[in-house]
Amino acid sequence: MKDSSGQEKIYDVIIVGGAAAGLTAALYCARRTLHTLVLTKSLGGQAAMTPAIENYPGTKKIAGVDLMLQFQNHAKSYGAQFAYETVTSLTKEKEVFTVKTTTGQYMARAVILAFGLTPRNLEVPGEQGLQGKGVVYCATCDAPLFKGKDVAVVGGTFEALDAALLLARMHCRVTLVHEKDGYPTHKKLFEQVQQNPQIQLRMNSAVVRVEGTQKVEAVVIHGKEAAEEERIPVAGVFVEKGHKIDSAWVGDLVEFDKQKAILISLNNETKTPGLFAAGDVTPLRDKQVVISAGEGAKAALSAYHYLQKQSGKPVLLVDWKHSEE
Image (cartoon, rainbow, N blue to C red):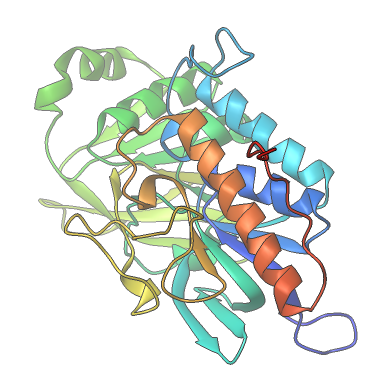
């Protein structure tokens, strides 16, 4: 990514991940006046799919997606920037990191890994180029943007059924695409979907490509017993195929435990100077929003201290230890 003068722009910090840890890290970095970019495939992670969070301090009860949006808006208010892209590789040369995505590359002096679980892709032509332009991975977050439009929901998960019903309530005309003939583990919810006149079913079918130039225009599906492909005009494609831990692109810049979690120090440092990690991608025992948020704050402050030392500037530390008299 280049600046207005044509030179390669170098951010102070790039944060990979847009859930509780990443969003909190973005807030803390931005408040320290660090030029901060968040790269994420979707907003909110697992928290955004939680109907109600009742144990986050200061909020007796709040929808997960609303809490995550508050996190994001808070970070944005201090200047944090966001790009909805899939990260494909991370390298470091001298003191600068290069983060490549499906649509470009970005450079930074420090990186915070906070991606947690990653939504599964469709793995079809057109998907990656239209991410954030109609291809989305969180109906709870993005459904209001498609109110009254034609959309497709793809997946065999509980979230796929829930997304279809949510979009139908928003007066969308929904096409639900699933590679199998039903949802045996979610029978009652599937019955609600079947009875909803706003939802058209395409069972035993798979999406083979997403079409569009500047935004999504259609999905093309192919049924197991169909002779030809079917093109369905839509404004949005909601991918609800579940989540996975996707960390192979980090390469050998970090060390992993047996569960493929990234090993860190008490200050969220990885084995590579300038590279930090926080949240569910690390060996946290308890997967809670408040814990991930705290870890994101720690990682951000560690990144700030690292950058200050690299630039030769003083780092102001607060020592809460009792002094001996």
